[in-house]
Length: 289
Ligand code: UTP
Image (cartoon, rainbow, N blue to C red; front, side, top):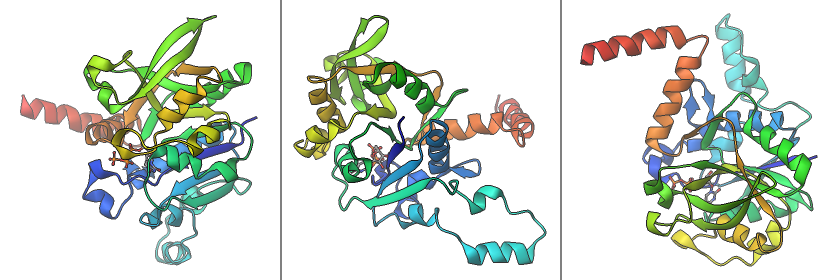
C-alpha cells in the first residue's frame, strides 16, 4: 500500500517567463483544469490518500487553489443560474489529507524531495512532477503501483527520446533480468555523446524511503542543484531500481511546445469541444495551404 504522493512544485519555471512571474506553471490550464488537478487525480487513482506539496512562498496561488473561495462562490450563486461545478468546491475528497511544505530556496528537485522526509516517514511513496502530463487509459502511477506490488523495488518511469535531446533529461542505462528493466546507471542531463542510452526519466517515481539517506548527504550537481538523479545513482548500489516503460502519451508541459501540444490534443479529445475544434483546425489548414 502506497499512501503518500509527493508533488515538488517549488521550481522557478524559467522557461515560461514572464507568465510564471504571477502564475506557477502547475496552475496553467489544459482546457479548463490546471495541471495540478490532473496530477492530483492521477495520484488518487493510484490509491494515494496523503498529498504532500513542496511549494514556495513565491507561488501562493498553489495553496490558494485548495482553499474555499467563499466570496466567488457566493457571487456565482447570487449572480447567475449556472450550476457551480463540483470540482470548484472540492479539489480533493474530504478523506484525503493535503500537506504543504515550503522549500525556502529552489535548491533542486533532490532537495525538494528531501523536504518531504518527515511527512512521508518510513514507507515507499510516489513522486509526481506536475509538468509531465501523461494521457493514458490506466493512470501512469497506477500502472507503476501494480508493478511495485509484485516487486517492492523503487521504480522510475522512462521513455525513449531522440538522442540529440538527452541533455534535457536524466538518462538510464538498463539491462533485462527476468523480463524486467533493471537500471544499472543513471546520469543527469548528459550530452548525447556521453549518454549511456536514449531512455529518459519521466516525472513519475515510486521510491523507497532509503532515498532520504542519500538525499541528506547529496552534494550539488548539474546546474548547481541537489539532483534526485545523483541520489538514485547511490541508491542503485544498495537496492535494485526498476525502469518502467509506461503505456501512455507524455506531454512536457514545462516546455512551450509540449504545453501547446497538450492543449491541442486534449482539446481534440474533449467531448464538449472536440468536433468544433477539429473543424476549426481543418479550416485553418485549408486557409494556409
Ligand atoms: P524543472 O527542472 O522543470 O525546473 O523541475 P523548474 O524550475 O520548475 O522549470 P524551469 O526549468 O526553470 O522552466 C522539475 C520539477 O521539480 C520541481 C519543479 O517545480 C518541477 O515540478 N522543483 C525543481 C522543485 O520543487 N524545487 C526545486 O528546487 C527545483
